[in-house]
Amino acid sequence: MLAKSRAEGGLPDDQVVGDMAAAGTYLRSLPSLNGKVGILGSCSGGRHTYLTACRTPGVFDAAVDCWGGSVVQARERLTPAQPVSPIEYTKDLSCPLLGLFGEDDQNPAPAQVALHEQELKKYHKQYEFHSYKGAGHGFFYYHLPMYRHEQAMDGWKKLWAFLEQHRDAPQYA
Image (cartoon, rainbow, N blue to C red; front, side, top):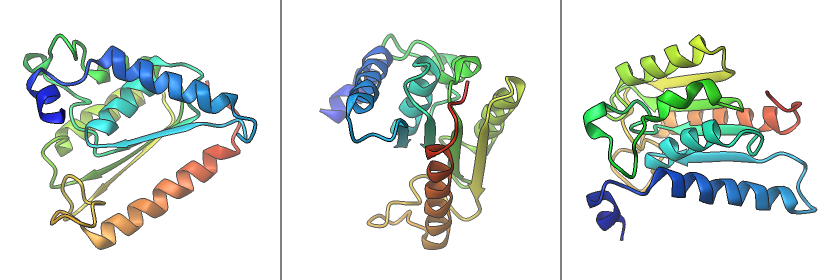
């Protein structure tokens, strides 16, 4: 199914955003919730996380993008399912963002991460980016050859600290 979806241009952005917004809204309805909902994804899920955090104001309180490819998407790579590069929505980002990246990655390449950061600065968004030397795409995946223990451990530490920080923080606007 995943291969078929990719061959057809990927999951439709509107479907992903709708599904993730519904999940966030559902979580907010739970009586055990502390009032905060975070969103996190890696690879294409990092792209989806960023896209959703930009297009669903007030649903999420923090977002974590782990090496999200195609946040900075070239025009020629846009499809009917993914008609807009997520970076185009940066002005609408409605929560703090953590980005974790490998300097050896090609999607996103360091130049794409720099463009992403430039847009976040342009719109005065609350974010923190960390790029790791000697790490490529998927460096958290302990069961695959791209795993990098030292970088992954530091990344997990930063991820949990970021979520903890925004768990108790007042809502970001």
